[in-house]
Image (cartoon, rainbow, N blue to C red; front, side, top):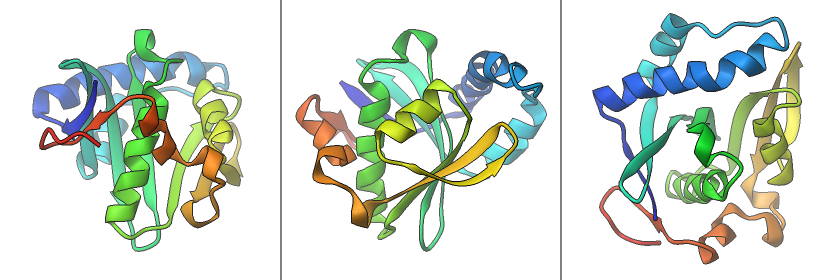
Length: 167
């Protein structure tokens, strides 16, 4: 069972370590590095969530909502949980959050040719900006094809919210 809840201080510290673990190899392929102090400063002011599977911490999600979009600053999963259904389930939850916040767009940045960029493309995101190895992507929820809607992933596995309700 997937559950997403507001991060605690200890979980935030684990997230900073996970970001470095996941991102350093991807960034180094493009001559870039991962800066923990920049990540800390940038993410502390965001809405941060921990991702749990069967009560075990498996990842981190950092968001920012504007009047038009829900921006994913980072989505990190433990290496053993990558390439499974969990990323899709997180996007199901993000689709629900976007609806609750009355925004019609999901946006994020990714490293070009990364596993994350591949997932975003499969979900229907389009590139909206490029800056060297980094790309910005967006997905209009208004124009989503029914077969790509993140909410349909919920038919595969239930998602639990902060209060323990199943969706």
